[in-house]
Length: 291
Length: 220
Image: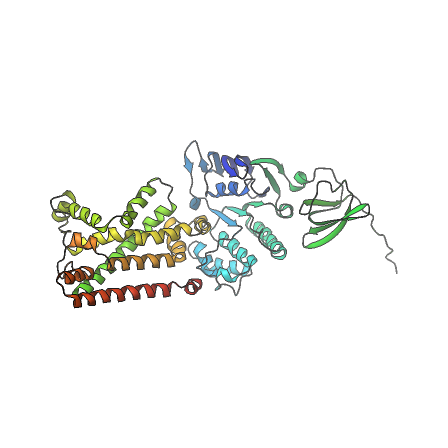
């Protein structure tokens, strides 16, 4: 169990703001911290990693105290046994893929490194330098490297936000695979609603430095009691007025879809808005199966 | 020839000592949050602004056998610092320290903190991170520091003259031998010393700029 009760002052474009977070994460749970830029997501993750100390409060992981302001305890990052993957992947440019993995592995576990290379689809790239890899390949190495150190907590700081949609979807599946295989307690920071729904079982919504809502993604983001069969998270690419209705062009997964919406429905929306598309009811086509 | 052998011996020893001192010191200054680091940075950079004779004078006084430090070195360690090669080494190390330290420190301060933190997250200590991640990433800065310290030691005059004097085969380095020849009105020999020093400086810097060319850095 990860118990977090911390306070830290952040400097935001609108002035100083307190990050005041109190949350519990169960062992083996996959949670996301969702919020806009500047909400304090990365600051929170860095405090969990031990890269930046809180100003008040405590962080406990299982029976270990990682941080306690009143007792002046601050366990260094090296002893927290965490795996941290950030947006910029932080691969060491002077080392090849193989050397990056060897550097991370405890006591040069050759077998595990080979397994990691195979799992991450990096066969044939072992001797390449990070600069020669694509964005998706770099994140695969970063993810594999982080896991070779025998971590007990996986922290992911928007690791997929710089990737194109194909690489992103592939890596999302890979993260799910890793989670299923290792059962590692995982905290993912993201501002992508699709990622929240696809990956996590619980989401904490961080707004202005505070956790405003938490729960299952469906409970948190779908407020009205819909009875729909289909629900998708989507991003609005275009709003086009056509007579009395509006045609919304949406990005759902890696598909572009057009739907119709009334003026009232789109009053709060603009291009780039993240929305949920759900069908309240549908009439199936019933066709005779006899020839 | 002897002054040149002495000059090179001095420059090589000083460069090695400075490299050993500067890497941990630069790491501390670059990554420490201590307020004392500003005082240390200021003290280390003093030779950049002070006349060399001022430093040479204070070293001469400090290491004089009548004073505590000089007495300690002579009676306890059996080393006479003033007017000896040891004195030249100590004086040159202090005087050339900013030339080695500053490029390495700047290299470390500009080095990606994300890479340092990534190494820490993998459970690596600051020393392991320094050795495997930071130093390979700041090779050009280390090379700059080494060349600057080496070249500066070769061209040193004031500190060396004050603490080492002008003893042939012991403390008479090339720059002092040149001064000596001019005083004795031997302009031809003085010219040979001067030309040789110009040549050495030119080739040291030429090799440095060749090794540090942008293309070579991209290959790293």
